[in-house]
Image (cartoon, rainbow, N blue to C red):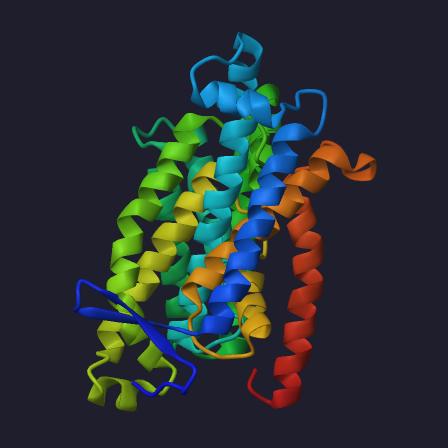
Length: 346
């Protein structure tokens, strides 16, 4: 694999060499600091805010019942789901954009997130013995399959993917709207909020689902990372260098679908995190490539910012976090569309 003079390698068990650049390492350290600051702000601000001393007391087993309730039942699960689901969305978008070489390849544009939401809605309505994560995964797989079939050329054509993704998302939205109108009022209200993308009422079960997903997927991503770096050079060259382009693409898409589906299962189809995160990672580093770690960190940061905004900005009070990401993401998508059409690649 070709690297620049500034590229170094982090070796895992002397068998896997993961490339990194010192500048990127510094940058992502700063982003981690910003994430920690947002976590602290989320814990401390508001009527139920706690102090750093309360957090230390909880770790030592000396916290009051009220502090335990806030950290273990209210604020703690919410902030952990924001971090982990945001990271999963960022990774999913980075994988899609890398293996399809399509700057608009993301669960949002492909209708995958909407399909996962439809799967969750269908499980809610119909007496199917399936848990919510299974419904999200089946819905996501159905969506990506329909898009791939509809384009007639896989996922590499930007314009075809956009058109097929719009159609699949519209069908998925129709399913979810049917479910919302067919369910009881209280259940419909909760489902409608979830389908926008919300972190309200998250609990440790949601944390466990998305955490387990990342624990399982991360070692596979580490193993796959060197081959993902080669995909950018084209299938023929990547295969000649040992990248196994076709197999790598299939494996990456499967991982991307799983990550997006599980993120949707715990947080709802939060819009455009998956699309924006990889682009932001590339813009910040000024380099191309998968940027898996950077995309994950940016995804977590974006979702934390959106959730903190809906909790503490009066104009946004009570809104689902997905409303904020949809607003900014829609503008970003418009910018990408204009850019790609000017390049003549769409």
